[in-house]
Length: 331
Image (cartoon, rainbow, N blue to C red; front, side, top):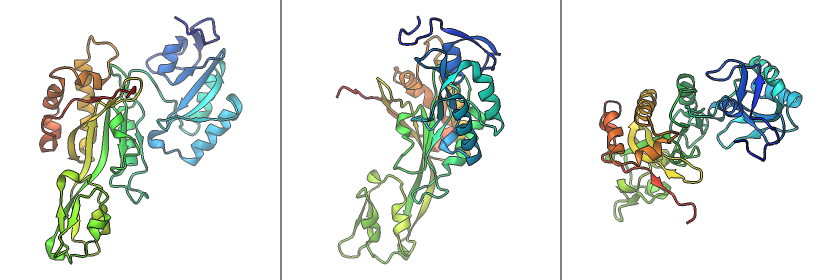
């Protein structure tokens, strides 16, 4: 049924650009949305979503998008919540021109629909002083390997470089947060108490007599503030990697994702995504457009997922993780 807020009297148009899985021709608004061409309320107008993995957009691409937007769009572009750059008010008759001109700088149109979406990320460890992991490098790897892969529903990934979690890993279908386990070397410690002052989580207390640190693991967020603050390098990096969360989502009925593994390596990430999508597609059969978080809340499904992932997670798996937590937005 056509949304009565959309002025077009039809829900299909003929386009001269291919969309994921379909050649050019007559396509429904839904098919076009799947390919990144989102119908607006205004007659014949669409928003074209540009792919910007991890929110990083080279200057040459940015200039070309501006040029295309000035020609075929409105007097602005829109930065989406998930770091895509969108060109609104594009007439569908101009899709072929938009795509051709964007392709001059290898700028692609991003897809929507039931598939692996473009990953989001913070700036990572390249120049951010809080960064613990190469979020941008991993985003490129993941986008090149998995973008557009079909799923039962949308499948969003993200990468945060530290526990500040700018990329909101708890709200994604599958996400990775940089982490460093701090280890204390007693012989280097002078009892200066700086680490206890630097820890924002109260995970380190100083001994009242010696000043040596007393570490509370249950409070530690693996942020490495103590390591950066220590003047004698008595605090050093132990295990490093990513905290893995699964099953989060936002929307009308949001879920908080569950931690299922800790300190997985960069090399582990592609295999974790591949195996997770494999499990998701297998167990979502016959259940319609179901998000992985909803699936994991069904009885026995979290255990099934962890069993499926044991050869990838290995000793990094969390023991008996809880299903994603439903959040009531009315409260």
